[in-house]
Length: 515
Image (tube, rainbow, N blue to C red):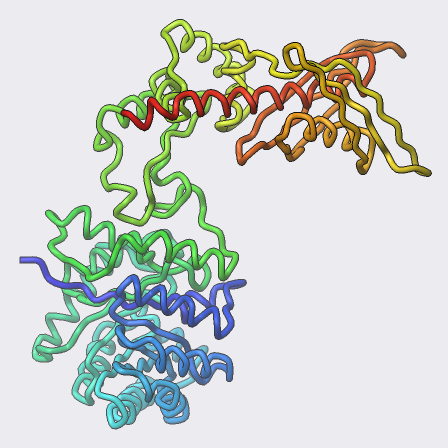
């Protein structure tokens, strides 16, 4: 039978201590509400005595976030503990979390205290905290570099004094899984007379082993994990909450544990941390990275199209994403390209697919990633003939630094001709506004580029434009010895593509509706 693992989230305390990750009160409240939606068991809201801002944030979270236990961190002294309790007292489920270092290197160089003095301070701190709050956690900072017999002595004493949870931090990410697991097992064995004590793990990622050490600790008897969203925290960060949760969910057959986390909120929580702190997630980050559910290799894409389980051990929906993505690049195959065109509404014959793939591979050698606009351009320029709804008959534009730019444009549509004038921020802008008036659709110019394709004063100039009509991107290009003429024709080329696409969708709408 599987056992519950309590998720102690310290994003707002240890995570926020990461350089550049500070949050203000309103941002912390927003994050705490997301952690409540995620259904974490404990939120460590901050370190109340560290600053007035930290105190107010813990106090606000304790007063407004009701479902999780709200913890406040404090050092092992009366002033810290009483300040923490002042911030926590309105919490529905408060916890005082007190700590002190136990390794000889910390005692000698940081605390400058003896073992007996630290033992006495630990016990006194827990007693003070327990008089104020029923839920008290004690952490032995740098536990993994502490003398084992001394660590047992400290934990035994604080549990006798009333601590309900003891935390064994790998504060500097020093341990490896086998070593850390053996420490946890030894502590649980020698402290087995404290039947109701919860053993907790708090692992840092300095050697990249935070999650591995945490999972080993669970196998050896820890039932609380201290972790952060996206693994943010001091130096190389903490154990990543999303990785631990999804590991337990995905590999329950070998890790017989469960959490109450609503995993569908994981991606939202990850994005919120990024948005609030500016601490971006690497693309290949497990679970929440940009590439976690993205596939480019042709073999992988072919497998995904046949059965997603060939290359995905969890669904994107299980972490809050809508779907996986088949990223088109130079490693993609024909099956993925065909599926993408089908998603865009194009049905290609085998011959059209063959030609499209030829142009696609040429483009993919030049670009890292192919976008929908690129695929539409391949279809329109290289595969299918796009009829010209409008043809340019006449264009005249004038401008200068002493007058308002203006343009006159004449377009032909079948047997009909249309003329429009417009003013703009320059002759090109005026031309495009005049074209928009005739065609009835307004485009947004995203990119405009002119280059010479031959030499001399009469060089042929090629104009390339990238535009957006109705939320869809289109490219246009044209060449002429007159750059004004080329500019008008390039934009009109994009306009005709947009009109053709709108007409195609309108023609296919009844068929889609009846289907």
